[in-house]
Image (cartoon, rainbow, N blue to C red; front, side):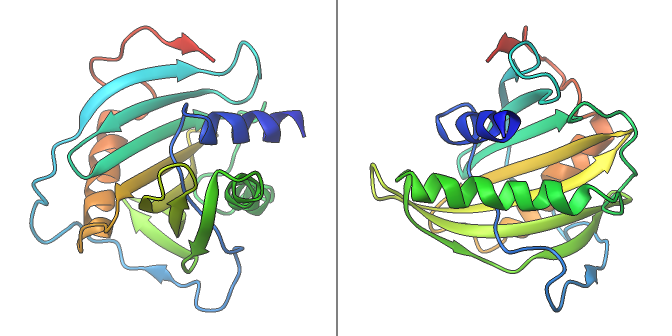
Length: 204
Protein backbone atom coordinates (compact mmCIF):
# COMPACT_ATOMS: atom_id res chain seq x y z
CA UNK A 1 0.00 0.00 0.00
CA UNK A 2 2.87 2.37 0.76
CA UNK A 3 4.29 1.91 -2.72
CA UNK A 4 0.89 2.38 -4.33
CA UNK A 5 0.23 5.55 -2.36
CA UNK A 6 3.65 6.90 -3.34
CA UNK A 7 2.90 6.17 -6.99
CA UNK A 8 -0.40 7.98 -6.64
CA UNK A 9 1.23 11.02 -5.12
CA UNK A 10 3.95 11.24 -7.76
CA UNK A 11 1.44 10.73 -10.55
CA UNK A 12 -1.10 13.30 -9.49
CA UNK A 13 0.64 15.96 -7.40
CA UNK A 14 2.82 17.20 -10.23
CA UNK A 15 5.73 14.77 -10.40
CA UNK A 16 4.18 12.79 -13.20
CA UNK A 17 1.44 12.93 -15.83
CA UNK A 18 -2.05 11.55 -16.06
CA UNK A 19 -3.47 8.35 -17.65
CA UNK A 20 -5.06 4.74 -17.89
CA UNK A 21 -8.25 2.70 -17.00
CA UNK A 22 -10.27 -0.52 -17.83
CA UNK A 23 -9.03 -3.85 -16.61
CA UNK A 24 -6.91 -6.11 -18.78
CA UNK A 25 -8.39 -9.25 -20.22
CA UNK A 26 -11.53 -7.52 -21.50
CA UNK A 27 -13.13 -8.66 -24.74
CA UNK A 28 -11.42 -7.52 -27.89
CA UNK A 29 -8.00 -7.20 -26.27
CA UNK A 30 -6.26 -8.33 -29.46
CA UNK A 31 -2.68 -7.40 -30.27
CA UNK A 32 -2.62 -4.62 -32.81
CA UNK A 33 -0.26 -4.96 -35.75
CA UNK A 34 3.20 -3.49 -35.23
CA UNK A 35 3.75 -0.66 -37.66
CA UNK A 36 5.40 2.72 -37.63
CA UNK A 37 3.40 5.77 -38.53
CA UNK A 38 3.17 6.04 -42.30
CA UNK A 39 4.57 9.57 -42.14
CA UNK A 40 6.51 11.39 -39.41
CA UNK A 41 4.13 13.32 -37.19
CA UNK A 42 6.35 16.39 -37.00
CA UNK A 43 5.97 16.68 -33.22
CA UNK A 44 9.23 17.64 -31.51
CA UNK A 45 9.69 16.53 -27.89
CA UNK A 46 12.01 18.40 -25.54
CA UNK A 47 13.62 16.63 -22.59
CA UNK A 48 12.85 18.53 -19.36
CA UNK A 49 14.25 16.67 -16.35
CA UNK A 50 14.48 13.40 -14.44
CA UNK A 51 13.45 12.29 -10.97
CA UNK A 52 14.42 9.37 -8.76
CA UNK A 53 12.01 7.82 -6.25
CA UNK A 54 14.33 5.14 -4.94
CA UNK A 55 15.61 6.92 -1.83
CA UNK A 56 12.16 7.29 -0.30
CA UNK A 57 10.47 4.31 -1.97
CA UNK A 58 12.78 1.52 -3.16
CA UNK A 59 11.36 -0.17 -6.22
CA UNK A 60 9.77 2.93 -7.78
CA UNK A 61 12.81 3.70 -9.94
CA UNK A 62 12.98 6.92 -11.91
CA UNK A 63 11.05 9.04 -14.38
CA UNK A 64 11.95 11.32 -17.28
CA UNK A 65 9.75 14.22 -18.44
CA UNK A 66 9.38 15.39 -22.05
CA UNK A 67 7.21 18.24 -23.35
CA UNK A 68 5.99 19.49 -26.71
CA UNK A 69 3.39 21.86 -28.15
CA UNK A 70 0.73 19.12 -27.91
CA UNK A 71 1.29 17.89 -24.34
CA UNK A 72 3.75 16.03 -22.14
CA UNK A 73 5.14 12.55 -21.57
CA UNK A 74 6.61 10.85 -18.52
CA UNK A 75 8.75 7.76 -18.99
CA UNK A 76 8.99 5.50 -15.92
CA UNK A 77 11.60 2.79 -15.44
CA UNK A 78 11.07 0.82 -12.22
CA UNK A 79 11.25 -2.72 -10.85
CA UNK A 80 9.02 -2.98 -7.75
CA UNK A 81 12.03 -4.63 -6.05
CA UNK A 82 12.40 -7.25 -8.80
CA UNK A 83 14.92 -7.60 -11.61
CA UNK A 84 13.39 -10.60 -13.39
CA UNK A 85 10.21 -9.27 -14.98
CA UNK A 86 9.32 -11.36 -18.02
CA UNK A 87 9.61 -9.34 -21.22
CA UNK A 88 6.34 -7.93 -22.57
CA UNK A 89 3.04 -8.50 -20.77
CA UNK A 90 3.27 -12.19 -19.86
CA UNK A 91 4.73 -12.00 -16.35
CA UNK A 92 2.35 -13.53 -13.74
CA UNK A 93 2.37 -10.22 -11.85
CA UNK A 94 1.96 -7.98 -14.88
CA UNK A 95 -1.85 -7.72 -14.73
CA UNK A 96 -1.59 -6.59 -11.12
CA UNK A 97 0.73 -3.77 -12.13
CA UNK A 98 -1.59 -2.71 -14.92
CA UNK A 99 -4.57 -2.71 -12.55
CA UNK A 100 -2.53 -0.51 -10.20
CA UNK A 101 -2.08 1.94 -13.05
CA UNK A 102 -5.84 2.05 -13.49
CA UNK A 103 -6.38 2.37 -9.73
CA UNK A 104 -4.19 5.48 -9.65
CA UNK A 105 -6.68 7.30 -11.87
CA UNK A 106 -9.66 6.01 -9.92
CA UNK A 107 -8.15 7.15 -6.62
CA UNK A 108 -7.18 10.53 -8.03
CA UNK A 109 -10.76 11.02 -9.18
CA UNK A 110 -12.10 9.97 -5.78
CA UNK A 111 -9.72 12.45 -4.12
CA UNK A 112 -11.05 15.25 -6.29
CA UNK A 113 -8.14 15.80 -8.70
CA UNK A 114 -10.50 15.10 -11.62
CA UNK A 115 -14.18 15.84 -11.99
CA UNK A 116 -14.46 12.97 -14.46
CA UNK A 117 -12.27 10.24 -15.89
CA UNK A 118 -13.75 8.42 -18.88
CA UNK A 119 -11.77 5.29 -19.82
CA UNK A 120 -11.20 3.97 -23.30
CA UNK A 121 -10.60 0.33 -24.28
CA UNK A 122 -7.63 -1.73 -23.12
CA UNK A 123 -5.45 -3.04 -25.94
CA UNK A 124 -2.22 -4.94 -26.39
CA UNK A 125 -0.06 -3.32 -29.08
CA UNK A 126 3.32 -4.15 -30.59
CA UNK A 127 5.84 -1.32 -30.72
CA UNK A 128 9.54 -1.68 -31.50
CA UNK A 129 9.42 -5.44 -30.93
CA UNK A 130 7.71 -5.17 -27.52
CA UNK A 131 4.12 -5.89 -26.51
CA UNK A 132 2.62 -3.04 -24.50
CA UNK A 133 -0.69 -3.00 -22.67
CA UNK A 134 -2.35 0.31 -23.39
CA UNK A 135 -5.34 2.29 -22.18
CA UNK A 136 -6.62 5.82 -22.66
CA UNK A 137 -8.54 8.24 -20.48
CA UNK A 138 -10.37 11.50 -21.06
CA UNK A 139 -9.78 13.51 -17.91
CA UNK A 140 -11.32 16.76 -16.72
CA UNK A 141 -9.06 18.60 -14.29
CA UNK A 142 -10.99 19.68 -11.20
CA UNK A 143 -8.91 22.81 -10.68
CA UNK A 144 -8.94 24.46 -14.11
CA UNK A 145 -11.74 22.41 -15.76
CA UNK A 146 -9.49 21.68 -18.72
CA UNK A 147 -9.87 18.42 -20.61
CA UNK A 148 -6.90 16.13 -21.26
CA UNK A 149 -6.65 12.99 -23.34
CA UNK A 150 -4.25 10.65 -21.60
CA UNK A 151 -2.66 7.37 -22.67
CA UNK A 152 -0.67 4.78 -20.73
CA UNK A 153 1.56 2.09 -22.24
CA UNK A 154 3.07 -0.54 -19.93
CA UNK A 155 5.51 -3.36 -20.69
CA UNK A 156 8.48 -5.16 -19.16
CA UNK A 157 11.93 -4.82 -20.70
CA UNK A 158 15.34 -5.87 -19.46
CA UNK A 159 13.89 -7.35 -16.27
CA UNK A 160 12.16 -4.12 -15.27
CA UNK A 161 8.87 -2.34 -15.94
CA UNK A 162 8.68 0.41 -18.53
CA UNK A 163 5.69 2.77 -18.55
CA UNK A 164 4.81 5.72 -20.75
CA UNK A 165 2.21 8.23 -19.58
CA UNK A 166 1.22 10.61 -22.36
CA UNK A 167 -1.11 13.51 -21.77
CA UNK A 168 -2.39 15.65 -24.63
CA UNK A 169 -4.03 19.03 -24.27
CA UNK A 170 -7.66 18.56 -25.22
CA UNK A 171 -8.84 18.06 -27.78
CA UNK A 172 -5.99 15.70 -28.60
CA UNK A 173 -4.62 15.67 -32.15
CA UNK A 174 -6.42 13.26 -34.45
CA UNK A 175 -3.15 11.35 -34.83
CA UNK A 176 -2.45 11.14 -31.08
CA UNK A 177 -1.81 7.40 -31.20
CA UNK A 178 0.64 7.82 -34.07
CA UNK A 179 2.42 10.53 -32.07
CA UNK A 180 2.59 8.21 -29.05
CA UNK A 181 3.88 5.29 -31.11
CA UNK A 182 6.51 7.45 -32.81
CA UNK A 183 7.83 8.68 -29.45
CA UNK A 184 7.93 5.18 -27.93
CA UNK A 185 9.71 3.73 -30.96
CA UNK A 186 12.42 6.38 -30.77
CA UNK A 187 12.70 6.23 -26.99
CA UNK A 188 13.07 2.44 -26.88
CA UNK A 189 15.75 2.59 -29.58
CA UNK A 190 17.76 5.33 -27.88
CA UNK A 191 17.32 4.00 -24.34
CA UNK A 192 14.54 4.93 -21.90
CA UNK A 193 16.81 4.44 -18.86
CA UNK A 194 18.97 7.51 -19.42
CA UNK A 195 17.79 9.94 -22.10
CA UNK A 196 20.33 11.97 -24.03
CA UNK A 197 21.07 15.13 -22.09
CA UNK A 198 19.77 13.73 -18.81
CA UNK A 199 20.26 16.17 -15.97
CA UNK A 200 21.17 15.16 -12.46
CA UNK A 201 18.29 13.18 -11.00
CA UNK A 202 16.14 14.91 -8.43
CA UNK A 203 15.08 12.78 -5.50
CA UNK A 204 11.35 12.77 -4.81
